[in-house]
Length: 339
Image (cartoon, rainbow, N blue to C red; front, side, top):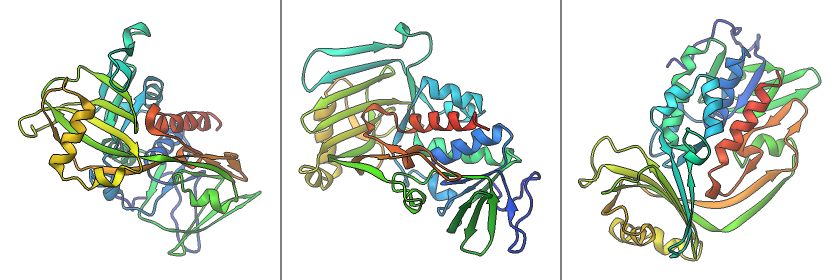
C-alpha cells in the first residue's frame, strides 16, 4: 500500500496550500479505521492521521487480543463493504455458556433460539487491522497519513485546521477523536471524564487444544474475576500436535497478578489448565501472553465544537461483555448517518 498516494478527489497538500477534506479522523486503530471506511463508503472525503506506523499496528506482537463482533456489528461491517475481508478469519459463536466458579449449573444461550445467524464472531485484532488497512487503496476518497504527528488542532466556527509537525496542514469541517481511552484530543478540549480502575488485570493469550471447542464461548466467574474462553478458527500449523484454538481472557486480582505474570510458560499453562478444566483435552500456549490493567472511563459529553469522540475516547469498559468495539461501531453507524 502506498501511504503517500493522493486520492484523485482530494486536493494536494503543501505548506502554502493546505489539503482540504470533509473529515479528519485521529487514530488509525480499529475504531478509527472502521469509521473512516464508513464515512468513505458514504462518499465523504476523509483523512486518517496516526503517529504509529501501520505495519507495526498489524503485527501479532503489537496486540494479541481478540474481539467479539456482535451480529449487529457484523451487519454494519457488511453494509460498508468490510465484512468479506474480516469474516474470512472469524470464528462463529453459536453457543454461550455462563457459569459460576465450579458450579455444575450454567446459563446456556443457543443462537438457534434467536434466529439462524451466529450470536457473534471471534477474530484476532491484528487480522481486523490488516483487513482495514488493505481496503485503503480501493477508496479514492480516503487518505491514510501514518506515521504522522499532530502539533495542534484549531477548531472554530469556520472549520478545523490540523497542523502536523512537518508544518503541513489539513482543513476539514469536523474532527473525530478515535485516539483511545487516554485521548489527548479529549483532554485538550477540556472534556471531563469519569474513570474507575478495577482491582484486576487480565491475562490475554491464545491456546491450542486437543478437542474441538464446538463454537462455544465460555464465561466463568472465578474468585479473582471473570474468565473467558472464546472460540477461534483452527491454527494454520499445529502447536505441539494440537490444531484447535481458543482465545483466553483471564481476569485476576492485582494482588496475584505479579506471581502469575512471572511464571514460566509451563507453570502458566498448568495454572491456566486449572481454570479451563479438562473438557478441551491437552492444551498448550499458542501465542505470547499479555497483561492489561482493567478500568472504565466515560466522557461527560461526546461532542464539542466541530469535534466528536468515538470508541474508547468516549467510553471504555470492562472486557467481560466483549462490547468495546461493538459500542464504537454503533457510534460510527450513527455518525455516518448524520452526513
